[in-house]
Length: 255
Image (cartoon, rainbow, N blue to C red; front, side, top):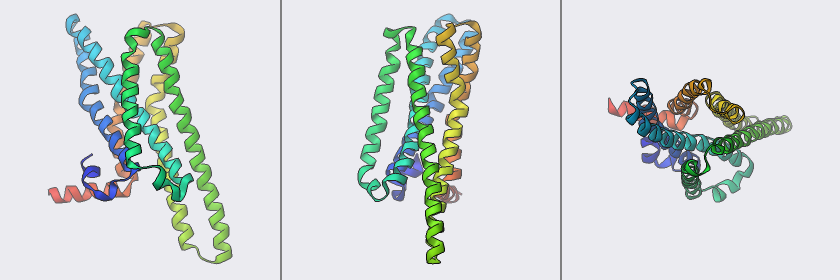
């Protein structure tokens, strides 16, 4: 968050989304994970007064922060597809202001939906499972399109290079396209690894109801979802050269 905030070269829509993702991941680690641990400790110690209060805190903090992180990740994938399809129009259509408006809307709508649990009751999990599967499908379609565009660009540039005898510019463009595609693949792969087990348990609950086995399963899959926010920063430092160099520069300056 500090690096994106302080580095003027990173003030773009894509990095604005990464900044917002970092904020939600930070809140997962600072609020979501501790509230989950405190809730489980109260349950194990049979402190029912603390258990009830912490369960409410854990529910809101966990669902809101992890849910926003999940939806923002999908937004990052969509942004990469727009960058490849809009070309020169991308900068005029996708702006930092619009990226921030998108994330603000995600926070507000998902928070309102989480609060609606009190009024909707048991059917809330059924609708939530459906809503959560929608971004997974959208992200899958975006990832497929990105790879399709990357392959198309590579074929076109290879043919052009054969005719023109100039490989340098085409190679650079193809490498950029490939790198975006591979980065999105990592994002989507991690999204599935960390969130799909949780979604699967939610789907099972809609069919069987809340059982003791599902309660245990929720503890495990919720832990996996929370771990995702700790992994995201390493993925972006690894895949994005601008972030990686800024981190190294900051660490060197600190020493």
